[in-house]
Length: 261
Image 1 (cartoon, rainbow, N blue to C red):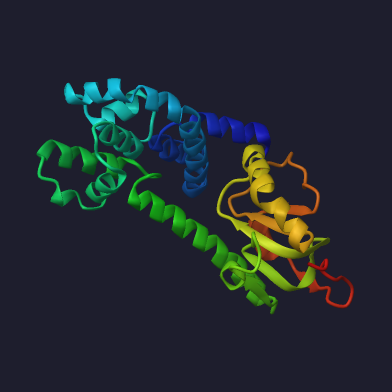
Image 2 (cartoon, one colour):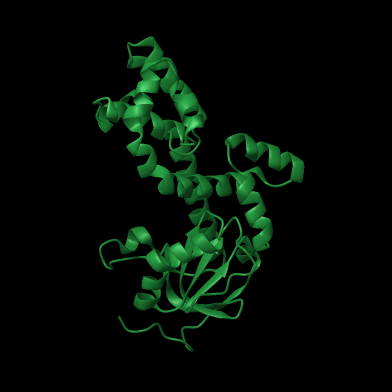
């Protein structure tokens, strides 16, 4: 996807309703738009978190005055469940107590609170329990896609679970032997059930992928929902998308050795 096309979509994805609208208007995959909307929402929430937190006492007074948590979420452009959490913490409630209400709303005696907790949980596709579950399933789906491709090519590898405790950071799949795919010689593959725009890629490289190159040599990152065309491969890291599933590969055990650890 061209970076300008991505920015155009990114700028329009302000609410969950925009996902369905753009999917219909532009004949785009709804799951792709959901992924981009999620990335935008998480970034925007991180930027404005402390500003909204400073206003929490004022917002709490608005809620006590009769405004619903969902309407306050819309007014301050802050995720519904996080708005509820902030209000309840400001009112003396612990995180544990709040999340128990979110998970078990039928146990809430106050009718207004129960109704509003159910409302914000239903409307939040990112920070609610069901939204978190969707993101988890998306991640495991991506890992399953990757492992299916590796297995189809009879490639052996160790998963993040297999490597737990052996290294400070571990990729989703560390190949037992290096391979060549699409002209790239790689030792590891990381699965990302996200869209690789410049912000996402830079974040992943600095926090995660660059350390892999220091530990295991060159590797590959797969953005299953695509990436912007203009991005360049960082040193020692190759970027691809779901087209990996149609690529062939060659084992390089006799030609290429992984760096000594």
